[in-house]
Image 1 (tube, rainbow, N blue to C red):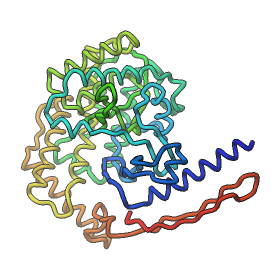
Image 2 (cartoon, rainbow, N blue to C red):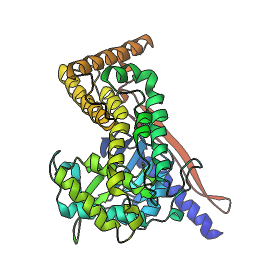
Image 3 (cartoon, rainbow, N blue to C red):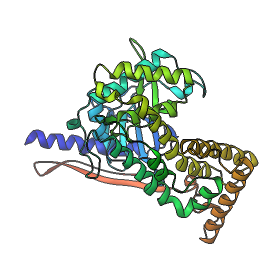
Image 4 (tube, helix red, strand yellow):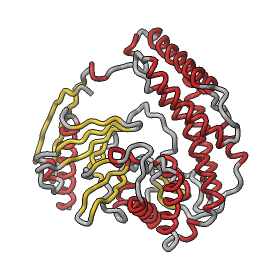
Amino acid sequence: MALQLLHRAHQSLVRLFAQIRHAAEDGFVGEGYHNTTRIRELRLPLALLLGKWPVSLLGVFRTPKRDAIESIPRIWPREAEVLRAVNSRLPDVPRCLVDTGPWTLSSYVPGRLLEKEVPKGGTYGTPLMSKLADVFAALADVSKDELPQLPAYWPRDWDSQGFLRCQVQFTNDAVYGANLARFGTLFDAVGVPEDAAERFLAITPGLTPRPFSLLHTDVHPGNIVLSPRKDGTRPVVIDWESAMYGDPLHDLATHLVRMGYIDAERDAMINEWLRAMRPRHPEATEGLEKDLPVYLAFEHVQSVFPDVMRAALKLPTRPTDQDFAVAADKVCRAVRLAREALDLGESPADLPTVGAALRQWHESERRVAHACGQGEEGRGWKDLRKSGRRVGGAVSVRLGGVVTASLTWTVVTPW
């Protein structure tokens, strides 16, 4: 009983001092599609409470964005539970140190992001691809019993067709349907078929049943840290909030597309994946030649909706002609790849047409904000750096009903 009380007291203090560091203004701030990430020194006393020496000890604070555009189903609400299972096979992967629900604190992986080391369109080399293939094989080693509980609606193990159907339904309902009111006219103007996901499923042959495994679903250069180790540089995969349980070919396909491999390296990565997977999980490789192209095509189909929306939302408050040109190029590429996957040929909308559609959508957003009395600081325009909020709280640590520590704090943060 006394040990339990001490553990609770320790956890309360950890959360308290983690909250104080989370509310601070120092450190590096990064903005991703789904999270705001802040890298900060943990300092005393938090570092010591975590059993670490505080000199140059860094931590990663991540806060999910409420308005993030979701492109895949998130079946596990807490990344920390996934990381515990992953850490048993991949000890270099970040460890969750504090999980408050609204935000998390994880260990920092030293090194540089792969996207900073290899320019877009560059080559990665067989040694790196071999190590990444070993990561995928290690994920397949994680048993279902080690993972968090699956939702009741999730397809049964080995039901690869049901897994694909689940992805299609999510794309149709939660990505396309949920954003239709705001982006429907833009989808139509740039040539996105309204029944893209359903049409894809209708033309897709049945998939080979394969055993399910833990999937990362987003292994790309921005989620791979080249971390220095005594035995050389090691790729460490970060950001596991999109992890799911399903057909391992899906993970390989999303990786191949998002890495942007040249043709020769894409084929080499497939061979490395087979080399790593076959000895340990031979059934996971069955039907690859027939089914991998299906998942590659679906990646382009399901990506077209978030790619179009993100290109539009990324436009600044007062976009220039160059801003519209860059956004139109991204949209045209996404639409072209999706239509090719659906065997629909080229999009009827060219760059000038897409650019005009983006201008019209942007002007519509501006009018909506103005009508709501928000001006350019309204919907989609608010600059959070101009406002402040007060973060604070209080905590008391009790042992045997006696208050042994009490602390209150207030921090004003621009976020």
